[in-house]
Length: 271
Image (cartoon, rainbow, N blue to C red; front, side, top):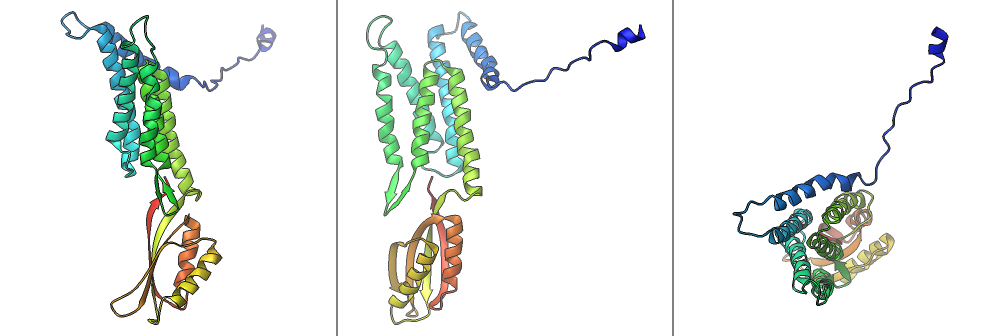
């Protein structure tokens, strides 16, 4: 019997392999609870079951849009909490109207919803700012476009798709934003103010500044020259470059012989 026991095969242990659909499946109980709530409405409830389903879709769109808008608000972007929430909520509303107003068998069910995309294009175009060679707001414009798509998905009842897209968008905005800053992948715009040691004119200071900029591989933007109260030359300019290049340029400018003082301030990141 001992030999027979030794001949038994070893017991195997089950290894849990990662499931790519686990994220979507985790959202299904929440959506199931919403459907159960809408189906369990008592008879005294003044809103019909169909209308309650529409309200649930609008509420989900507002919550998902608010989650993305909160990230933009915390970064002090023009497209903040209310803007992104209204875009997502409005897209869901137009999607519902496109389905309900067309009727059950007649009409084009996509006519109203199809106008969301060009309308969002106008709003996104307003979020992009172009100022003297510097372009900003591209990420905010893309966020508006994604928020509208999430609202359309929520308005169409695709809750799992809308939730997954929201989580993916937040990962891109938060995690990838930190990766860009950590590995110096995002250019920033810095304003410099240089006061020269001489009061004869700004040409000697500008000549040395141009040489320092050429060594750093960057160029001036929005150059302005004037004189201080004690008759010293003052040069103000902005430079768009990566953070490491900005640090190297600041060190070079401080060491110039014609520069008495130098101050620099980061204006904005190209987001």
